[in-house]
Image (cartoon, rainbow over all chains, first blue to last red; front, side, top):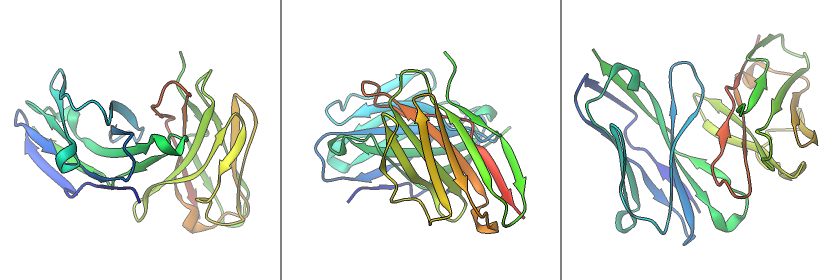
Length: 116
Length: 113
């Protein structure tokens, strides 16, 4: 069965600090996608990144970076030099390609608060 | 391109009333999903469609909930009769066969009094 665990329920950091959000997943499929979504206080769900299970290269996009490690079934998200606008709930999600349906299984989210 | 469009953004109704939520997916996407978000249960999939056909409705809580997709550009989620425990944010999302990423609408915040 598939499962996504975000053990950190809430994190608070002071502006300009770096912060890492953890995500651990479980799946029996060999082909899958991992995602991060951001939910700011306004409530919408914003897509941030997608990685497929065959691509373990880390990715950097501006102040955001993602570390995918199949050996530990983790897909962690780091924000460098955090800003107040980064305050949001961040969701990690898994999609098993084998189902053919692109169903997303979400973690419970991590609420990040960046204090000015 | 416009993203996923949902209406209304907010809905307040009284217990027992019928509620209809609407969604317009991104043009060209052939999968449409309805999710519900609550504090207690997080984000949960209610139903999804492929090419306007319901594929999996196992997440629909009970018979009071129904969803339709009469054409590729429109879907509805109906609750009849509504109950206070249906209060939640309902999201619609769409994706395409070659996209592999679900894009979400802004959500409808439903409050049932």
